[in-house]
Image 1: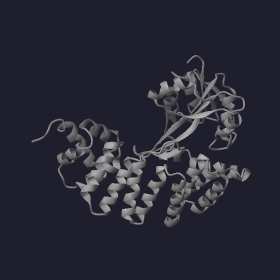
Image 2: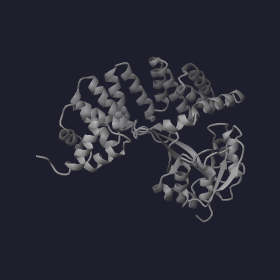
Image 3: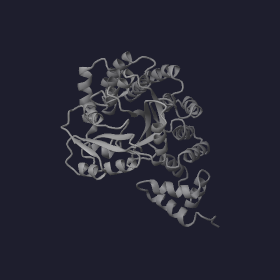
Length: 411
């Protein structure tokens, strides 16, 4: 692309994902700089096969330092930073080309779409991954490293770009195999010990404690974080969300609801707050209030302009929760209607499929198929069933029926 763009990465033992990652960008980048921190598999061989320049270093126990080695080697005006377990969405390549050839800013936040085992469990965050090569723009932070602060000091403008990187590193099989949780927690504790005023890292530490089930430590870290994050800092929204989650998991639902009520007063467009509120109200069996919360989620829609959100809180997941509330209130007809709306919105949402099957337990497969057909067409039913890594007996029977008999009405 006219020698404009370099891919910059750090890797270690990434042979599982690296080929797909590099293949997704090979036709858009002009150069690849890959910093290897001690691979013992075929990672470096794969990188060389794609024409990358590979720099070998000892692991410095600091992600920013490792990333900055790569930045120092860049020769083009623009840099794209990726992890090996990410892939650029092919249909977004024109967006990237345009952003660099006709720039509207010096740096861009892109959408990191993190996928899980279940297709519906997706979260999205905005992270700065494309920026101009500049001697003063460097990563900071031993873990969860960022260029945001150096961009600000260098007076580099930053806007969001509707460009997606699919991230597979939070698949439980991958995350656990890499021992990421323990590694992250150790590095975060070290960083915060050295930088006790770093509100961003205190939030990340709180997140890690929540993941580890250490809720008292999580709340202590988040409280310290909130004292250091001003109201206009976009991380503050996420810290409040983590605080509410920690309180809920620590069996303090009323305190969690107070945090969410106060948070919504400050950030009323952040649907995730209202969705968690509804979830807690369900746990307290306050069904009417939960119903109102999830209806509000649908009115708000998916949140825009925030750094992180759980996909579906303003759509199919809120509809599924409304179905659960309806079932709790003994209204199976309304529950089925909500479930079909959820499936229409997100055809791969397996929880909704399973709930429909449960509601129709004992009904013929043909009737189940006809009911699902009210939400999505036959081809989508087949594609959704095939997209799941495994199917139970009833799902397999439904797939066989859809393939063999669903094309025409049965007498």
